[in-house]
Each structure stands twice: as structure tokens, then as C-alpha cells.
Length: 352
Image 1: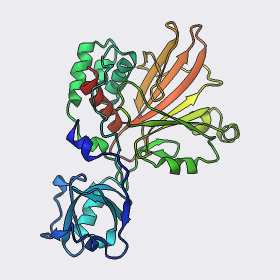
Image 2 (image 1 turned 45 degrees about the horizontal axis):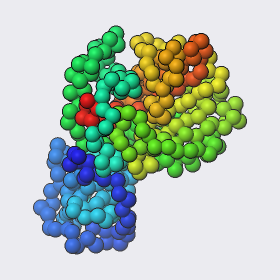
Image 3 (image 1 turned 135 degrees about the horizontal axis):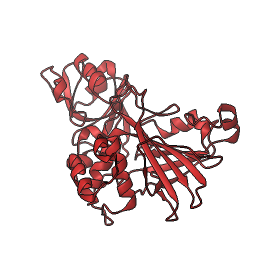
Image 4 (image 1 turned 120 degrees about the vertical axis):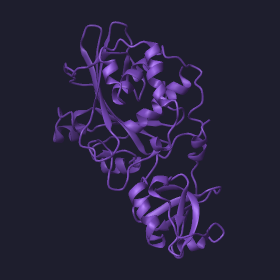
């Protein structure tokens, strides 16, 4: 178990609002400081010095903020506090706005334990390593896809140590766009509310895809309403209306971390750009594999453009053909690079 994983456990804490005196109400936790905020290079949201307007300060783990209210848990405490920005020192406000994400990816506290089914010969693991290699910068070595297990281990060595930054969400002014108005770490309830007219009642299931962190994600699958599809463009694959269903993968705090769009009717034959490879995994988030040896699964991944965040987002397309070469489904998965790094680390640590 990594120390950082326990420090960012997903237990739901009671929120304590501090509407009047803010940090001054935390007299048992605050101490007199030197009036100096942390240097920019040393800022750590998981161990930040929070300074009040009067110079008192407390060391805390930041939970999130919206530019108006800061939420944090003092170190060695369990209670979560919400403090208006105007009750913080100018230096603390500036540091949070410049360096602190508004939210963080939340994993299960035991997500990185050794998997009993470990092995790089697993077909989904092999597909994932190829996908992650292209997504995270090994494309020049993977063009031919004649990948051996020895190369898999050598490339995964890049992710042999966990980095806290992989858990960071976006800063206030740089949001990571996933798909059709959905952003990284958007609260699930907000997305459902925005897409109320587009989605039917959904169902959820635990994400058990090989290589993904254990007990950390759920997949919500929502059918797209027929009338919405007709009104917004049935064949427009860049929009939600182009698909029969959308699958939203959420973390332990019900924040959206990845999206998979599923088209299963009027699929048509679609030529995927090169490079692509023939794999076995039809849906990565829902863990669906081909059911016949002579069926065909073509996979292609590429970087998306247009995001304002510092992190990249890759779109992975999958075409699934039956044994007699009939197109059965087409899907797109949108995954941010930070999540891809966590999966690569998990495969290196627990699946070899």
C-alpha cells in the first residue's frame, strides 16, 4: 500500500461550514505563523500551509475549491472545513488559484494491492499496454505492434513510482474536456442534470477491467433517447446523438473520469485511421471481449485537441466485426492521460 493512497482515502467526511469567523474558529488547530505562504515550487495540496487573513495558519490536505470557498481537512484530523476565500491571506489565495486543482481523483484506499490474476499474457492487459504505450509516448516503438512481454516490462518501468500529481484535477481556468460538454471530474449528478432530456434511466456496475485500480470505479450506462438522436443528428459521431448509449466511469466521489460512447445499430463499416491494431477488447470500461476467435476487433487511439488543460486526452476507437465480417458495434473511449498513468503504474506494480 502506498503512503499517498492512504493519505487520500475516500471516506465521506462531515462538512463543517465556517460562515462567520472562518479559520479563527479553528483555534485548537491554528498556530501563529510567520506570515509567509509556501513557495510556488513547494506547494503541495496534500500537505499545504493554509494561512488566515490575521496570519494564523494550519497544515491541511486540500479537498477542493471553486475560487470562492476552500475545502480542506487539517492534517491528523478527520473533519472537513469550508472557508470563504476572503478569510484567507492574500498569499494563500493567490497560491491556491495559481497552483491548486479544484478537485482530485478519489481512489479506494486499497486500490494498489497485488492482483491474484496477474500476468502480461492477459488479452485485455496486452491491449491496454499497447493503448497506453501510444497514449503516453511510446508510439515510435509500437508502430508495428510486434510487442513482446519483455518490451512491455521495459516500457512500463517508466511508471514504477507513483506520483501525487496523477490524482490532480484541473485548475480553475483550465478544464479538461472529455466529450460533448462533459469535463474531467464533473460530478455525475450535474452531468445527469445537464443531459436530462438526452438520457434514459441508467444502470451502474463495478468496473472490473483487468489493470484498472481495484474497487475504485463504477460505470454508469445510459441509453440515449431516440427523439434526442433524431433532433441532434443520428450520424454525428462527434456528438452524443450519434450513439445508442453513453457510459460514464466515476471514481469513489462520483466524479466522471472517463467516457465511452457506444453505437450498436446502423453501425456501418468504418475505416479506422492508421496505426491501428487487431485486439480482443471491445469495450475497455465495461470489459467486453470478442466471443469468437475469428471475430475482428480493430483499435485505434489518438490525442484529442481543443482541451485547455495541461493534461492530454486520448480518444480510442474500436470497430467490432462478426465472424462473417458484419459490423456489430463502434465505440469511442475518452481517457485523460493522468488516469492512463495510474493504470500503467498499476499494471507494472500488480500485473507482472
